Image 1 (spheres, rainbow, N blue to C red):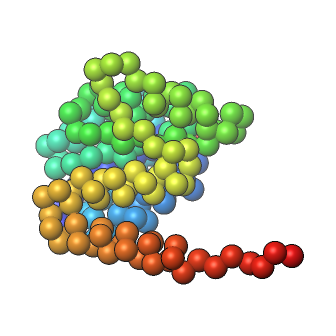
Image 2 (image 1 turned 120 degrees about the vertical axis):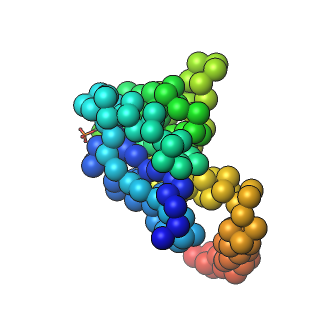
Length: 164
Ligand code: RP5
């Protein structure tokens, strides 16, 4: 098994429906990863331990998803130099706009790369992680190019229905 490269964490098991889309991409590209619940407000000591141990455990990036007052990505970023990719999870009452604003509005000095709300953001965070790893991995870069080429071919093959 390849050494661990990407960590996927989320504030609750209720985030899995969204965050599984990140894991699916990592599995598709054969990236060694882990996925676990690390809640910022329910298990803050675990969150700090995860961030503090990330570099030594070989993580090249952490994909962190959370909803509502989504402080998990920012707090992880505060405790590690490993790049943190934030995924806003759609919340029950504000549809994830609260999550997006919580994650994207980091004050200057501690960045979190922030993606779209929901499944697209989770998948894109994983694709971004693949692109980061591909900088030093020509074989992975070739697989990423192939993924893009397949999307291009699918888009070119799109047909529109006739006007009713
Ligand atoms: C956040 O609170 C989690 O990231 C989740 O999106 C949200 C709701 O959590 P649950 O009440 O569903 O466990 O910490």
